[in-house]
Image 1 (cartoon, helix red, strand yellow):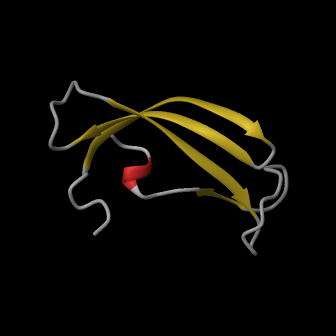
Image 2 (cartoon, rainbow, N blue to C red):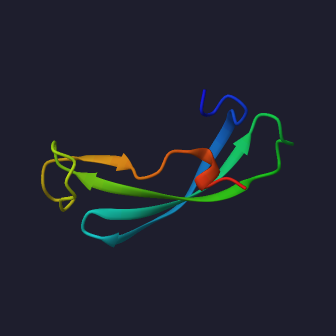
Length: 77
């Protein structure tokens, strides 16, 4: 599985930056189960607001927030 060797034990939201009407960056600190409990890994996750056809739309319109890239190698060292 994609996250088999990268299990989370905890996470913290640090901030959200709405960089565009249909896009935001979410800053987080991730804590992996196989790392010391006080060792946070900073990560930036890009989220897109999309309609039912998968096209970007303003977050003021109907749609769903979706993680742009979910492979852990894209945001974890």
